[in-house]
Every structure is written in C-alpha cells, then in structure tokens.
Image 1 (cartoon, rainbow, N blue to C red):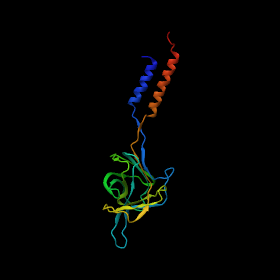
Image 2: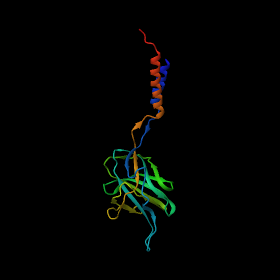
Image 3: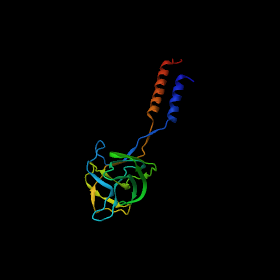
Image 4: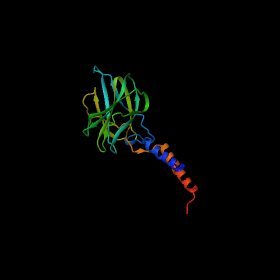
Length: 218
C-alpha cells in the first residue's frame, strides 16, 4: 500500500472508531450575561415553627419550557447551600406538569455540594423533554438543612410561586415571587472529536503532497 493510501486509511479508520463529542444544547436559561445572577435569593428547606407551629420543610419549584425537544443532560442552579441549618442534604427534582402545577416526578438529584455559586446536576435517567411543554425544577432538602436559590436578572417580572410543605400537595397562584436563576441542558448534536479532525486534515494534506510529487504518465 502506498504511503498516501496508508495515511488516508488510518485517518478514516480513526474517524470511524473515535467517539463523537456531544455539545449540550441549552433548552432553558434564566441566567444573565456571563452566567450571572442576583444576590437576592428565595429560601427553601427546613423551617422552624413559629408561635407553637410545628417545624416544616418548605420546597419551591419554578417552571421552564424547553426551546427544543431533547433528552435531559444536566441542570445548573445558582444556589447557596447550606444556609443556616446544616444537618441534612440538598435535593433537586424535575417534574412534568399539567401546565400549572408539578405532576409526575421525572428525576431526583442528590448532591454533596456545598458553598455558594452554580451547582451542576448531571442526569442519569435522561428523561425526554418536549419543546413547548411545561416542566418544573424543585429545590428542597432532606434532614435539618436549608438553602437559598438566587434570583434571575433576566426575568425580573413576577411569576407564580409554586411551593409545598413536607412533600405534600402543591399550591400556587397565591404568593408571587421573582424567577430564579437556573439552566437546563439537553442532548446536543454529535460533533467529531478534535483529534479526528486533525487526522483527517493530515490525511488530506498528505494526499495533496503525494499527488504533486507523482509525475503524470503520458
């Protein structure tokens, strides 16, 4: 086999065997420019009872509508956890909805992350999210812990405050709150790995160099 054919064969073989990279598609994004968010925040998690009321667990959920249909890849939420109570863990849930309130649970994310900033939750179940449908992301806790969900600078308007206590029924439409900062990522289109592109380019260059050096026969 000629040197040119060898290089080309190796290049194309590498293209066939290399795993394609997948660029995540942004299905929803309420962050500001540069992944920014407000310093004000919504509370969630363990709450102490006042005036003799029993302690409770307050969870807050916000809606999103995917811009395109795709399998869920990851969530990114602007959080501070823990806030004041520290004997518990963070939990984030994704729900389908009836358009107004959360319904079926699609996936649950637990996390050992702590601190203040953008928390990423990678999907294992990869539920299909349909364009135009309404879904909810919930931030809550397990145990005696609480946190803050930072507000979005892109959507300063008021949106319905969908919430529940102690994992009970959802309520919404009464209290209203600012939207929160989060991003939903879905499965993107596959793209060739950079190494594969380099190999293919090398093969093409070698082919051109070889053709210039080979004299044409009469």
